[in-house]
Image (cartoon, rainbow, N blue to C red):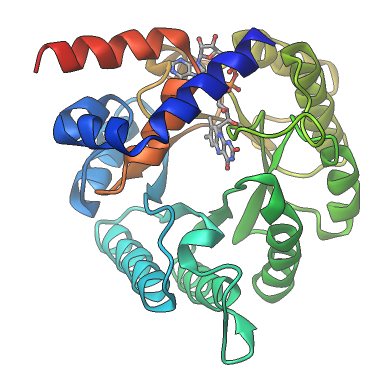
Length: 310
Ligand code: FDA
């Protein structure tokens, strides 16, 4: 409950225009703990650095709340350039996209623009042997995102495209079951948006229990799982679960966010687990940054300290 109140307070305050202006005026320096840089070159550099610790990368060009169809398609073009740049640098491209950024919900030439642009991105990723994960956004987008995920898996295969399920939503267990026929590659997360109690569990203990249930169900079904959490208790439980069920280290991976628990990321990689860091980059870092602050009270102190330093 306190978690929910804290998250709500931070996301409400950070949504105020004057707070955004104030934080943005302090520039990228404040965001750099969580964001790799403002351009693709910095993001690829971050991938290289992580590779040194045996950690894989998952690149995310930040760009939320882009709205015109032209802007959405231009954004998709920038993701295509990222795929080219990664491939040229000898990095197997693994990217995450938000369908809203590429036009989901807007119809152009009789088709949802998000799907049209995602098709271009997934198609190019396949050409390079890469992978695209469709991030999950707030609850009104879940139905369409899952439907578009289904279309893309049917066209490009589950080795090229995956998506995300959020354990805080009541609906997610049923969604997991409904996707079963696709043998989907899924990232399981707790969920980062401010959602009403009518759709999302308000109690952290319930969200955590649901998280374990989803990961175990996906593993038992023999489908690839991206265990995306920094929660050490869950990570330990997953390690025991795979041992007890004879599940190989190639059947799943741990995923964490860039700049968060780098020590744990390194430790897991040293233990032979596949570990991937989600590496956001781009000039549009504010919304992403706010969600990370909303996840942990100590992060507010970090921002305030940074601002006081000027
Ligand atoms: P929890 O919040 O319980 O935190 C466990 C511990 O982790 C904390 O005690 C703290 O030590 C540490 N921690 C967590 N967050 C931290 C932070 N911001 N700063 C410092 N320490 C922190 N969500 C979504 O809705 N859609 C999506 O597509 C994705 N995608 C995604 C990809 C990846 C790779 C990750 C790791 C996460 C996401 N998320 C997401 C975000 C996710 O829903 C969730 O908000 C965060 O992962 C925080 O939850 P934890 O599972 O880490 O647990």
